[in-house]
Amino acid sequence: MSFSGEVKEELSRQLSSARHCQLAELSAIVSACGMYSVRPHGRLFLVLQSENLLVARKANLLLRETFDVVPDVSVMGSGDWKKSRVYTLAVRNGDVVTRILQATKFMQENGALIDLELPVSSLLLRTPCCRRAFLRGAFLSMGSISNPEKSYHFEIVCSNPEKATAIRDLIQSFDVDAKIVLRKKYHVVYVKESDGLADLLGLMEANISLMNFENIRILREISGTVNRKVNCETANLNKTVSAAVEQVRDIELIREKIGLDQLPQPLQEMAYVRLEHPDTPLKDLGTYLEPLVGKSGVNHRLRKLKNIAEDLRK
Image (cartoon, rainbow, N blue to C red; front, side, top):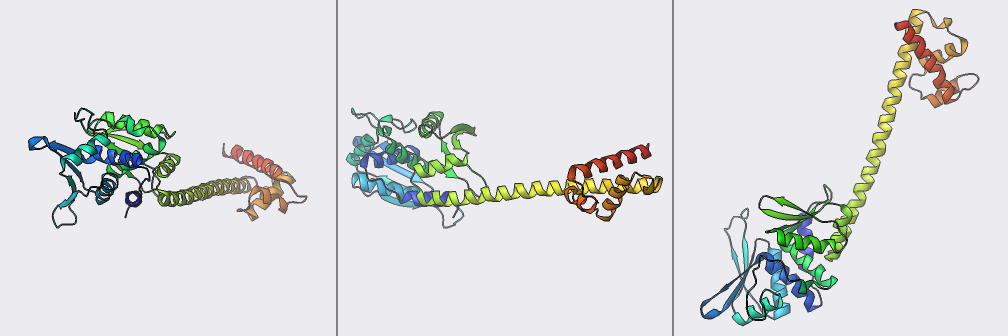
């Protein structure tokens, strides 16, 4: 199972203790997956459809807990496991549907129905706990999160800009930086920072997934630090080796053109020591000289040898 699937599996079993939070979460699922129709004699009919079994499971749980109703459940699809199945929950009792739509604010007090394409009523989202529950329902039915071992990306796909703006503002109310991008015909609310993803998992009460996420994040940070250190050390080593090769080449040119015995005594000693120890770093090279010479002194002598070699090349 993917990391996103693991998060949804955990959230599908998470149930708020307060009824107002349950209604907020249900309203998110109804908004994303719901359809209502008026049957003969004015009776209402409500259907919730999703290709995700976890969404159907959570909707069924919320309907039972908040309205004491067991919806009719059906599954449509072929026997081919590669093809999607559609899980349908139907509530056919008109009085119950009226109660559901009124409680989730998709029906006004006068009985007028509200378009499910509109954002959920702010009356359901007045408290932080209800906003957290709504976010849980929205993610379950419309969201996904990437594998944190590869990247940090959380998104909720909305059918119109109004819904996307409402969800973005809700996420930002928790001081998480959320943005909107247009992807084909959909408006996608997304968060990319690792801290933001951790906050969202905590807000939705996906506590086990949050611990797994933090463990992966720590390992990634450690791995990144180690890689940067190794790369830095490798670069420094390559630089040292390249410099040593050039120094040896300069000294061999001097020996070929004029002979090392023509050099002043300090430079002559330096030349022989470098030829005998071509792989030794500068800070250790001076220990082979008498008297001992520090790194800056070694560097100064090698620069003089380089200047002599450059003059000989002209």
